[in-house]
Length: 269
Image 1 (tube, rainbow, N blue to C red):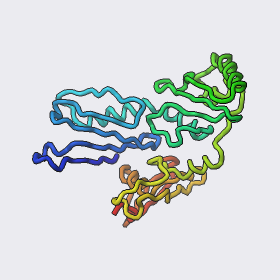
Image 2: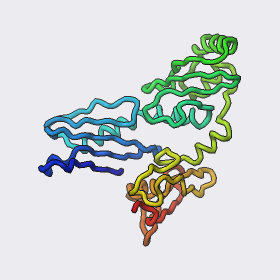
Image 3: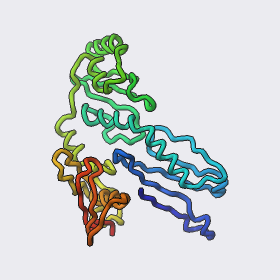
Image 4: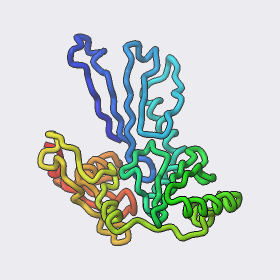
């Protein structure tokens, strides 16, 4: 877990300097989540304000005895509740031809999918019950759209939660669903498996790594997940089982658990 502190340098009182805390947390699937905690002047008598890249924020339980560690615990519990929702969306992004959004945030609950023949379907996934029948809207030429709507109305009653959303969708539409085009697959492969961006931000603190793409790939051929070495290094440092020998960190891939090693020299300068 990585924590960044932002302070108000104009304040004369050191106790009031702390304004914003950014917490970077990896869930059990290796997904990166950032929560911002803003401390009020009356903290800890009053609860902090929180925001995060999630479909909805949790109701913070706070008392006079509460502290920041309780905020973190509740955030982790909230992430756990959303695991199936994110797994469902990750499966859609990996298996279907998603045209929008191109780079969805973890708060986004919809996907526009290309069904072929210039026809599209917009799916809105139920956050609390992602395997349930999603809301949908068809777009395209009238004859094809009308045909798909009839199939949807006829078959949606057969939606089974024991099956994946993709299986149910193909069954309801009575068609095979096109997968991502080759270009889309290539884009997905170069995204960092930790920060989910193709390129690091432009930042002086990153030195030569500023704006760079993924530069480390898991050697397990059945995994081959790409990472920014900077992100992988920070992730390894957050794991208690990581070992260090000279200027190299040794640990395990966040996805397949095979051994990985990253030089500490590949860091922010």
